[in-house]
Image (cartoon, rainbow, N blue to C red; front, top):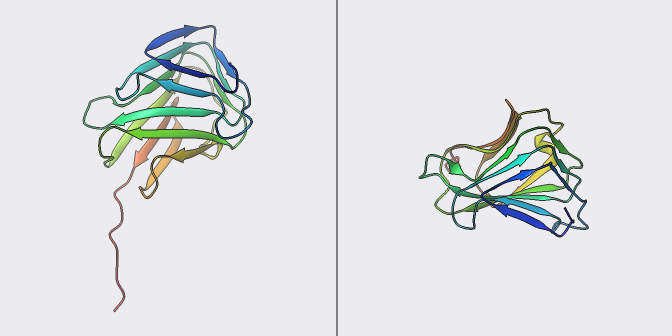
Length: 147
């Protein structure tokens, strides 16, 4: 896929995808589902993110699925520490866990490969474990005061 391209929707794509390295933060983007609704994009084959690539997810924690889902039926390979996960909240973000990506093969991805946009001021932990990329939203701390 071209570094400026976008793949999205509710679909199954065969033969894997290699996303070229983007020139800047506006690199190639994969966006499961349709804008404003939760959906699933399935890739049969490997997904290779070459760097400066974006994964965008709508989030609606009032539904059972909670977020868009990118399903990879093989390996999930990521290069560089300059990829971005974009969270587009449809409803208010609340405490809980959301599975963003699943894969059946192996991965070299770590949380350090990604920056997260859309959760500014909200505590979260990005995890790569159990064949998934998950984001856990924590309870915000209450402000303290000094006497």
